[in-house]
Length: 541
Image (tube, rainbow, N blue to C red; front, side, top):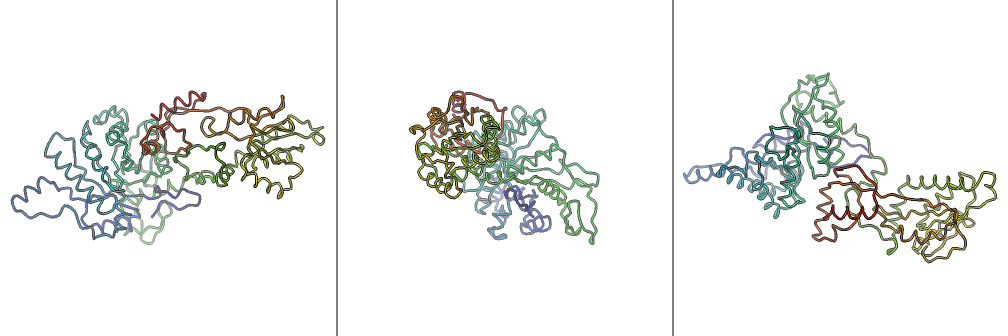
């Protein structure tokens, strides 16, 4: 049972909720009970008998004793069941940094065996246990070695989400679990198949500490049942801070996994009754002990606001590196223009600004006699021309528009638009580079949207500066000014995407990104372009 299906919502992996299970050699029953009866979408299951130790097996072999295989058969489930419904859980006892040499060697052997077996089963992911000691160097070395030859399977490193001031967690550097993860992934060279599974406990770190995780490759949030409170009706619920955190995880496509035992006295449900607290039909004889926790997570998911239309359109652009457009060098394609034109808010604001400019320049008593000359420099397929005409209609002012565009393909569309809309007497199409065109008259209002997403990377000021000669001494430029801002962030996905090119050039490229999975380290600050570029280069390198 997925957490919810609602129109306008991101149909991402966060819709699926799993459950952590104990070792059970009857995998079909384990899967049936938790998926069919419990309503969970997948299980995090131990693949190997927890009593298995390679060193003990070797002793048994030497003595001629019979021993069982360390894992069950791959035939008990179909390949699609293994792949879709099982996340492998590596034995929690392994400790590759132990001072005990036998334990250390057993741990390395077992880790390699279990991941090899999980890869054979075509599992999508395996859950690695948390590092046990103050150092995780050997553990990370072994994992990094495995990652070099691993197929597409992801490895989730289990990290406890502990409080910064928790002195009992002395194995975590500086008392911060993020530092533990950072040390481990640095030793694994930021490998893209290494991710995080966060253990969400009853106590949470500070808001700043939690915020750092949204820039990391967190794939799962393991919520322990003892982290839940009990509401007035006896059902499990979460504190407001936990609710906010889980909602944030769901919004970032992070899957939730329920772990632990039933810790709440959930009221019994009669066979002929009906609904539990979320309105779901339940038969008490088939009720899974952790089902109330799943129902509560589903309630949080379904309570989330649906994504606005603009956000839904931008989903495919989230955390995706796009090289800045070069409209001066390259003629833009129709698809690119269409993407621009979907930003309805921008053109509404332009229309308001143009309307205010018209009212400022033309008094009401001269509205019917005075014609305002307006130039749209970089007219594209005409959205600013349309916004200008609508502003003139709303304010009752007369306009004469020059639509200047260098892209010959867009000019074809502009001419067609003029004929279809009947703008022949109002709009003049100019197929020229604005830097070379000699205007027949000066403009009262100069309108352009030649602003890039980073600094001034799209034709401002190089083209707009050349167009300033069109403007009257007292003319109005829309926009009249703009400010670039900078904000330090951490974004693991973006870093890995740039790093995959294996050169310095891509680290120095000012990409355009719809950032989503980022940790914002400080507020936005205005700055000059020179400062922006210096900071950007320093941050990337």
